[in-house]
View 1 (cartoon, rainbow, N blue to C red):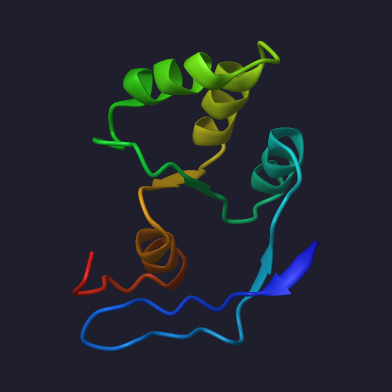
View 2 (view 1 turned 90 degrees about the vertical axis):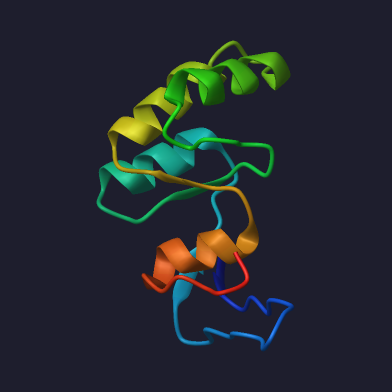
Length: 103
């Protein structure tokens, strides 16, 4: 699915990025293929505390995984350069390279 990114964030003002193409994959396999081909991949994990704590993240993934492949796919995604965002605002920051004041 191809769409155009538009994220309006509450706070002192809203930010919109209408000209950045974004693909929303329908599986972790598709996200991994995209990351391995050089696309920027953002994993939205609202409950993540410390994104640098990879083992804690993988443990949270394992708890909700029914396929048995989630932690391995996440590990491969992180090794391929995927970034972890705790909110849509942080995801936009990672995509644009701009840190918002409302994060």
